[in-house]
Length: 237
Image 1 (cartoon, rainbow, N blue to C red):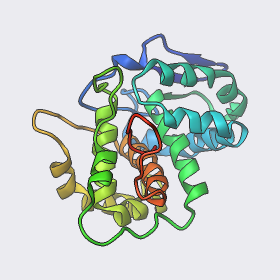
Image 2: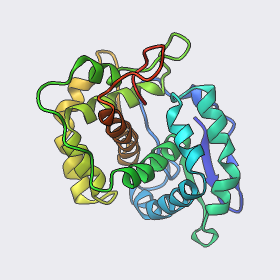
Image 3: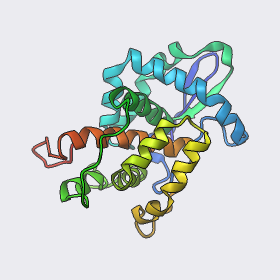
């Protein structure tokens, strides 16, 4: 998994995004040996960096979210962020480490709040239709599902089942009691969204980023009534 380290300079690790664990997401802003409270303390700096990045690179940011996680296309765009992230980094804050998944999720949340400042639109009544269910399914890359796409599909399922709860989660600050309450409200549906044989674990930061990206995608797809835009029949993104 590619990991971003901002210190005097931004350094990008050599591991490819495609090497991520295929059935889990265990990303942290801080290295594993840091305490959980350190992640909460560094979160404002992390979000400041990504808000600056999105402001300066809006097209590149949306292009990143249009890629399927774990593909070469995603890797090329995330690699291209190196100089911009370094320019947006507040040097006085000390070192900061975060993974490419958290980069993607943080960018998605900045765009989500820009596009849907009042939260997601009200969900249509009744059970989701086939087009909505197709939107939630894993997307294929070269005939297969990448490991990094699996957590995103689970997040889409959660957003489809509980859009209001996801809106509430994202309306609350990271690491707040309101965020935690919303996460707990998603637990029952989380079990229903995970296929047999798949083990899904996520930090609060990682889960929030996944939900932010798929909430943004849901809001856009809902506006199109989940109509297919591409000749190949892929769900809207």
